Amino acid sequence: EAGVAQSPRYKIIEKRQSVAFWCNPISGHATLYWYQQILGQGPKLLIQFQNNGVVDDSQLPKDRFSAERLKGVDSTLKIQPAKLEDSAVYLCASSHTGTTRSVWTDTQYFGPGTRLTVL
Amino acid sequence: EDKVVQSPLSLVVHEGDTVTLNCSYEVTNFRSLLWYKQEKKAPTFLFMLTSSGIEKKSGRLSSILDKKELFSILNITATQTGDSAVYLCAVRDNYGQNFVFGPGTRLSVLP
Image (tube, rainbow over all chains, first blue to last red; front, side):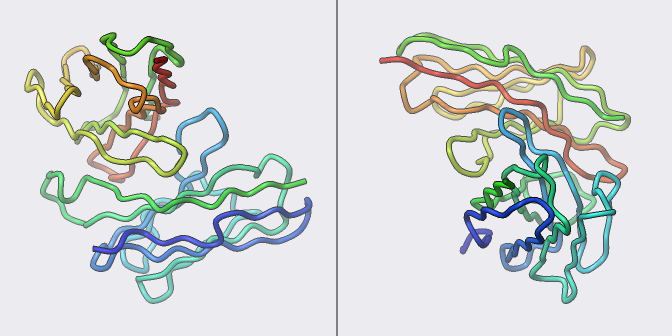
């Protein structure tokens, strides 16, 4: 089974520039998550999709961040314009969806992440 | 607001030692608690806990949940240098079904 794919792996930009990240989840996983992980901290959820609908985007800074998952598979996360404090690793994860509690539905599989440096 | 606290934040031990990592949480409608290991890359799944008092075990790692006192522990016996990593605890609720992560415990195992 192929894992979660992300690109690019590294990105360096200057503040006020724009940047986009791409994620391809594991085949068949309806739920997709974008996390921001600042150095020394745990991942913070930015947005959660189920298929192509948004489940939770309460912590997404909507004045500069946007995300989409148009066909319910791949997703892109965009930052425009970037600030210094956006420097972080952006992790994409996917999982099965279901109301029945199980390792199958509650285990997230993470991609390798994109390390963003804003200068 | 759901919250996860981990302690200690950092720990240095020598090979062969046994360590206990702690995770306490506040969540409105608890669904599950998960432990992850994060080395230089993305977090990898270790355990999922849903019921109190039932130990989950995988090799030298084990974990248990106490839903009354709202905490979980992760034990690693006979530590090896390959156990050096950040160990993340996350809780999931039944409402939004999202995951809230703690800050992690950075474990360093010295030879």
